[in-house]
Amino acid sequence: MSDSPPAPDVDAANITEIADGVWVIPDRRVPLVPNIGIIEGETSVLVVDTGMGPINGARVFEAAHEKARGRPLILTTTHFHPEHAFGAQAFVGNAHTICNRAQLDEFRDKGQAYVEMFRTFGPAVAHALEGVELTEPDETYDGAAHTLDLGGRRVQLLTWGLAHTRGDQVVFLPEERILFAGDLVEERIFPIYPYFPPEDADVDGSRWIDVLRELEALEPEQVVVGHGDVGGVGVISTAREYHQLLRRRTLELAADGLDADETVARLEPEIQAAYEGWEQPEWVAFGIRSFHATRAIDRLR
Image (cartoon, rainbow, N blue to C red):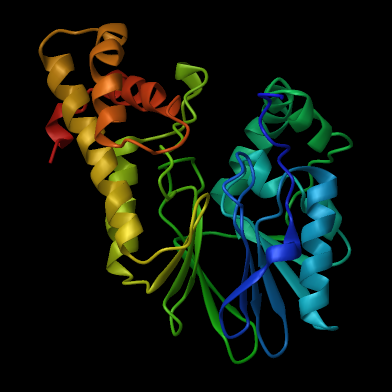
């Protein structure tokens, strides 16, 4: 029996309609598989995220094409990480792609390096990335918000800048109160602090907490997280409380004179015990090191 993780394959067989014309291809709690959205309007259909690599991108395209029934497709991505955006080549010539400019800038700066890094994550991930082509969006927008009219359905693309990445973007349906949160929110999974290497760590945990407050203020009734099960606004609150606890305890230990390694050794088991049953515990140490590096004690609240 193999202990290898499952392949990061998108499986559209269990696509689920969470509201009229709003579909989720669930991640099945498989690492490096995101929850993917398909949002129907009268005149066009929006796809949220692609899965990793050309094969997964093609699977998502086929699922969206089936739902579209001839309506034009629009693709957006929540951030530049490979499992969310590196299947976009399947949509070239078949959809209009759009995202925020900060996401494109980070994609240009780091995309190829992330391909090479992810290829080291095992044969299944390397296979998913075979033949990947890094494709840029047709359109970008500046500022904090952009509204799409899908025909009888309004969708807001919202961004607050640096948090989990430099260019996190959420997708919000204001009338239906549905939020596609990307990796700003995960459910019973320790949040990913992409902290490699530290000198290139475009993540800000304190800003992340602020953004989660903004997401709570949207008062969504359904939250499609980046990874994990669809929930309500409480899934955002739980994520915020985790980051706040991690920050508070890290800064307390740093103030007591513990260096980063000592803080990880002391705090990691405490946090894992407090969130027993959460998946991917390896990310706890990355979060501790991120907060320890900033040591922004004046921002503690």
